[in-house]
Image (tube, rainbow, N blue to C red; front, top):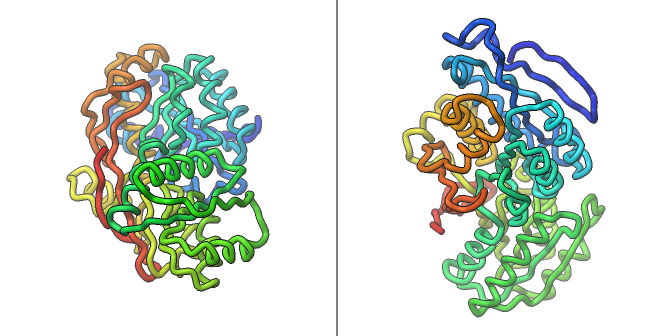
Length: 377
């Protein structure tokens, strides 16, 4: 993607984006620098890989089409080391580097650490797939491309009660994850409010060595469904639950569906459902074109890549409408976005930083994930 320079505070890569591919851009024009902050090393690295890919694809595409206002996009990549503190430090570096805007992070705990930094630095931040409700409460500089946990918790509770006719549920929560705790809380609240009963609330911690005891507790509780709102480790937990002979139907959130999830046990699921933001089965022309251009081989495309791709194009559109890369004008342009056509749907921001989004329900059947249905707000 052009010249590469490396710095390490804490770990930063600067990809001067596709300078040789900018068709018709004014020679010598100052590039527009944007930052992305995701995990390139550590426990979240595999989960974040598709987000990084989506950002890079969009930057390359924007530059190949002539850049923005005749100026190429230069992408500054920050590795957040898979930690909240690494995310906070990376956000501070991005603000100090005077980038026009920041895209990222993926995990909610990472973006929660970044949002106050971006807000105090008056730098627009667009998270691609962080769903924790508190993220956009940091202020008017913080936006998200995805739905919130309050929405997907309600969706999955309603789906369990309606489509699956579930009446009892067990939740299994990662106590070290803001995302897992927040989404479980929303599922429990909505499930109980609509007449369901939470029979057990179980917990675990990151890097836990064994889930055998936890799985035995799920089996003993005998629920209709088991809600496991985590990341790739959810697949390990579900595999342990299945090994105990539990008949509970597994449910999850948008942290599922990654390559790592599939490798760690998703391929062994006989039947399970999870919520996400987009499916490559979408019939919209933009979605079909995106899949045709960027899908290579049999591997499915997930919503992380599509949301990251949309985030860059939305930002480029905001810079055009702002007439340049001035941070405050770009922030105002993002906030004023209405009816932007993206791969993942039409994007508008009627509320501070948040937008109405449909949820896509995906079904695992004999280890293969496929589109099941869409549920509107």
